[in-house]
Length: 486
RNA sequence: CGGGGUGUAGCGCAGUUGGCUAGCGCGCACGCUUCGGGAGCGUGAGGUCCCGGGUUCAAGUCCCGGCACCCCGACCA
Image (tube, rainbow, N blue to C red):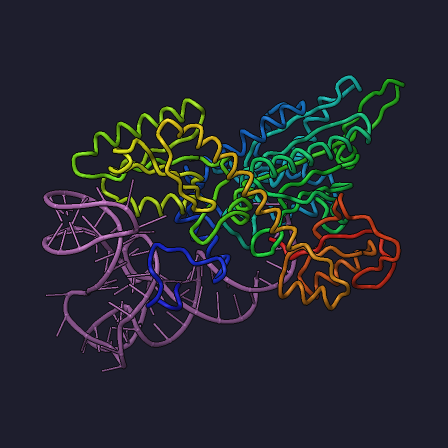
């Protein structure tokens, strides 16, 4: 629906400045990552988007296993009676549940929720598994789809069905559970930083923003290029709430029966949206090399009579790179011109492009172009592997550095509420300010400015002497990060 | 679930006070010439005009009802 049909050229994406949200959607679709389907909020994750997800999965799965967890799989359907066992939990999730009411043509005796998250089903099973303190801890993760009936959906950021991993652990003591919660939050933070080049801020959620049924929720909050915050991952201290609701009890060493302590933690395909909004530019995606489905694309510049020789030469280069575990795509299509291919692969965010044409053939060189800066260098063929490997590392580091700089520049400390509102309207970004710890203050700010309390950061979240709440003026108990959020 | 907008070829759109065989650009197929930053020419394929009813000699166009999607708000990983 263009309001300016005369000037809108097909197949080009809007700039981020013109309309960030349109830029986001168009980039995803033009880069061929995802598509809409007939069911509202249910998207197809196309191979290129799924390839990114697979790389995210691989990197995270490795870390989850390295911290002692195993994968398992629990059922999709949750009997309503199980969902009802934890009061706050059901209150939080019931409104967005999809229900199965019929099976094989007959009404079911009890309707079944399609899991919006798996605490209920998993806790009901854990209750059977736990008898003794010797059965603990239980350290299980699952990769699954979940469904939440969202009123307003958006590719990758908020879809009715989405993919995620959810860790569900059971512990003997609260201390052990708390360590687990913080350990996994740190896994997320480190993963985001080192794989996705997203510098997220770890911290604790306020009571109002907690997971339904948790004692405490911890989060890693990222800042998108439009100044809106994105909750990138959460880790919950579930206390004994679910253990009590589902009867997860064990006989401890001292021969007394005790309720277990639990955690859960997850990240979702939303990370794909976060990666796009952190790094993309007006040419399209920019994918961090470590997770890019294609790290290097090789493109021949054909000249009559040289097609075969160019393909052979580039094929060998691709092979040499693959031998070093570089993910390479050869674009040998003869129905597209080089310029078209350059644009297309830039749109798809491939970190490095290698071009070879007649001139290079003659000189035994290639042109290597990096996606993040556009810088081009001519490199002798026998230096390609080394150059590419160096560039992939450099690009990853440069992307993280740029994202960090952006986050830091856009984290501000308003001196008073007036400045808070002005900064929010004019600059957006993170606003770090003293908070009195009450929902009253938090809600008032939310209602008046649409900024929510994203977290009390681990680093910088302590109240300083003399700090007073940015809204109420009462003595502050912490410094909290506020932002408008996705 | 409230406010606004839009539904015409795969995509982006035009279509006059109701009128003839529903158009244009891009893309797609085929052919030739091309290829170092979105190629040119030629030929061609492609349509339940969102759905259902109504008015009319005649509906993409007017009327009524429905549906879907998008944008803006309230709820959320």
